[in-house]
Amino acid sequence: MSLLARYLHAFAGLPRSAWLLAAVLLVNTSGMMVVFFMSLYLARHLGWSTELAGLGMSGYGVGMLAGTLTGGLLSDRLGAFRVQRMSLLAAGVTLLTISFLRDFPVVLAAIALWGFCASALYPSNAAAMAAVCPPAVRARGFVLNRLAGNLGATIGPLVGGFLAQHDYRLLFWVDGATCLLAALASLCFFPGSRPEVSAEGSHAEPAKAEWWRDRIFLGVLAVTLGVALVFSQLFSTFGMYLKTAAGLPESRIGGLVAINTGLIVIVQMPLTHGTDRFSRTRLTALGALLLGAGFALMPFGNSLAYLAATVVVWTFGEMLTLPLLTTLTSLRASAAAQGRYQGLYTMSYSMGITAGPALGTWVYTVFGGRTLWMAVGGVATLAAGGMLALSRKWDGRSEAFPPPGAL
Image (cartoon, rainbow, N blue to C red; front, top):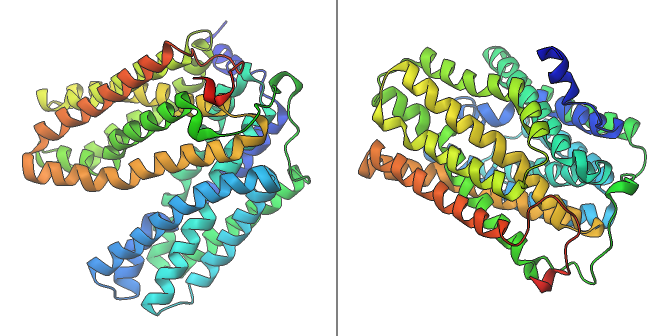
């Protein structure tokens, strides 16, 4: 088979519903531009101080943490598709409203509400994907979602930068409109409230969906938090270090990040497809190790080629860990508990993404770059060790799990 045929073959076997779910996510994330420019909007357009602008983004983070858990719980009760539409509709209306607000307390509350509404989409979307994809292709279903999200997140900031030059309020109007458009697309594609569960993917319901007694799932949450703490450095200290310590201009830094996104588009799906027969828990452990190693190797060389090689290392770690953690979460949950499990997983990941930049910049400022990247490598190694310990009890390839309290 040609390389192109092999690449396309990796997408084969995914149900139509999986493609439609990814399409809804693509429409939504293509308009996701406000989050990248919110701090500038608060500081330049509304005249807030830097501290108040930071507080506004913290309000978004608080709303996001609450929204992920609530979205998951509501998905189990009201249906995943219904919660998706509610999330998109509420986020769209809130964004349109924010553009007309000026007073600090009101804007802060509205930003927190926006974070709450917008983040409820992700556990409901993941729960629906887990339901429509049988176990054999579920990991690739989550990869398809991730590719759609990455593509949309690439389009959004590019368009947002152009709109912000003309009028910052256009950011809210376009972002809000795409939320409403995605809600309409979800209604057209999925008129019901609950996804049609694949017969191949159905499994027996445990006696009680008590996630807090499922020790393996709690371990997955702990590993997710560690991975998120490491991965969040990409959005904070990574560029700072390359600029100050390695002396790279912004164009070279952007080129290194482009290696990451390019590899994900080209390699992610074939990699997931090719490793489906292996233990998912051990692959996740390997991914966490590679993720940490890529960052930990950075202080040992400053050439562009060397730094590009480190990006390749941690990108392969990212491609192994993030989709597989979502897949492992879906396989631990019963059909009636997919929403809350995905909500808890998303909340754990969001906690790491929220806390990681603050912790990383503190370590970098006080102790320097070398100490930071060694610490990042240590956290990733602990996460890999934790997942390797879980692999002795469960390989992550089967839904045939015992009742939650039995492990």
